Image (cartoon, rainbow over all chains, first blue to last red; front, side, top):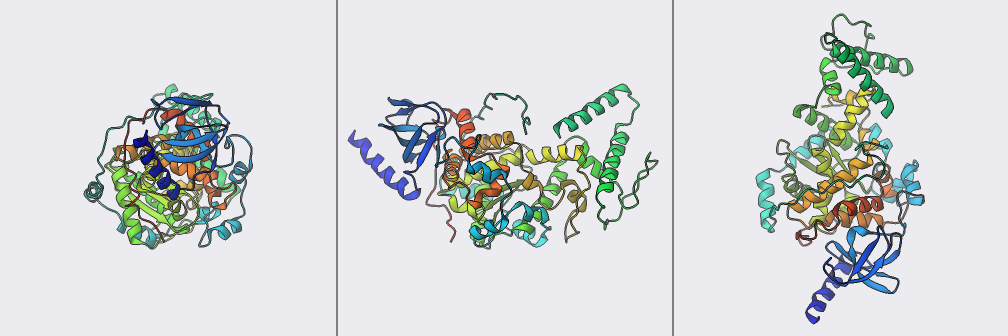
Length: 176
Length: 311
């Protein structure tokens, strides 16, 4: 147990400094909390879709969360960070901001240097000089492989992920 | 829109099967001319500055005086897959327009670093026929763009959210997937079939490819229209796998989505992003369904030390 505690403490420290966790979150699917960041660890609690959690730490594909009186590790993709609840599909101000035309001046105000809105993109004129600049920065496959090797990156075999079964539409381009 | 294109497709199929001697190409050409004429009645066509190509013979309806049809443009829009050369031409035009809206960050070390990471991830994608280009755009908006032919852009605002190289690899992997799956080319094909062809109103700029510009509409508008949400979910799944195949921790892209989900609602830096992408909460949920425990055994590198931090 002691051997586990030390790296875990170091990890929590490291993560806490890198990202601003200890944020609220919402459980996205019915899930289990595990005693360690592994699906083979013992289950400490079950949590339901929509439950609120407090995110305490992150390790790889796992988040350490507090849900009610229980604390444990949950899969990273089973929780969303932030205060928006289940978000996205329903109502809420985030969606409102996404679907209504925003005031471009406000974008610029936050952006400081320069914002980017749909009118900018529609009006955009071809810039050959910037494209030449982009061309000049291109690298070769040989350079990329050497760059990868420098930090021990090695290509590995990873299987494709299956397309989840659609709930209503079977068309890959449906519903929009 | 979908119904209209389906109707057209059904019409085309029934016509072509009814008579073997029927000239499908001619039919389509006339059909496009009709569309162009229809548009011409509602909005004045821009003056053509490019010399017209050899005009088509014996057209059933005479073309309008200043709106000539380039046969190759029809080939672009309506038949089969785009060739590699056409794909690259389209990508260059979209990229040049995007760069006209927002320039590259003037930091060669940053641009070089992103090109090295991007090319290494792209090497896992199976599209070695492309020369991949990566650029960081000088805007605090949080977004990333892909154009056909291997052109990938990340905004400075998004780059600032990243904590390590694995997260960058995940973001680039998502955009690389849009290219390998030809998502934007599919959108172009759909929109040209329903007659968006030849509506570009932009002036002729230096180095601009007018034929392609007519195909893609105004400026970099295609980047605003966005893709089907299923295309975004697919790019998330494939992008995560590309990053993992490159030896990175596969959780880079989901971590970035978490950071975006944690941003305050209505943050103006994300307004354009959320017009064209599903909300990060939806993307995390969809990715969770696909991934489940499948990547539990994958161990990759985060490389926080090597990550290039911008000032």
